[in-house]
Amino acid sequence: MELKEIQNLIKFVAKSGASEVKLEMEDVKITIKTSSSEEKETTTVVQHVPMGNMQQQMPMQQMPPQQAAPQEQQASGGSETTSKEEDDSKYITVKSPIIGTFYRKPSPDKPVFIEVGDAVKEGDVVCVIEAMKLFNEIESEVSGKVVKVLVDDASPVEFDQPLFLIDPS
Image (cartoon, rainbow, N blue to C red):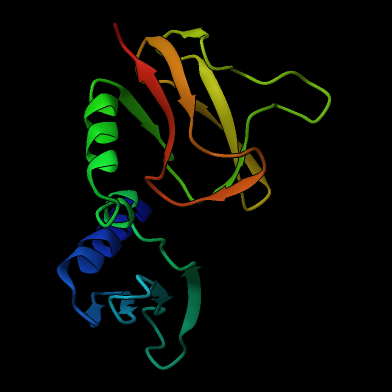
């Protein structure tokens, strides 16, 4: 099972409201547990079971708790939130493809990749995300002008978390 499939499964279970889901396949066991709806926290344990020895289980990955979706947090905001969401709807959101630490610079002594107001082209590097000691360059999927940076430098980010707003016009 691919990491992307596991991440999609986590999101699906979190949205469904189920408290616990167990999935067992040929050599993978996945348990997804969610706490109460107030806390919006999801814990996932993925275990690889070697084909020759079904009793020996070794954990492969422990996913950190998921944060509540920004839309869910804003839902209690009122009319100000609604007008802001309408304004932001014309922009394209660049989202994090992985869990890790967000950096706006390639290294501490270098300038940031992009600033608000900069024009970006499809394929331009907009940030790096460190995951497991590897620095992954994140490229823009659209061309346009950077409207807003949504994450502070050196902050942890979740899978699919919005990073930037880009005006494609």
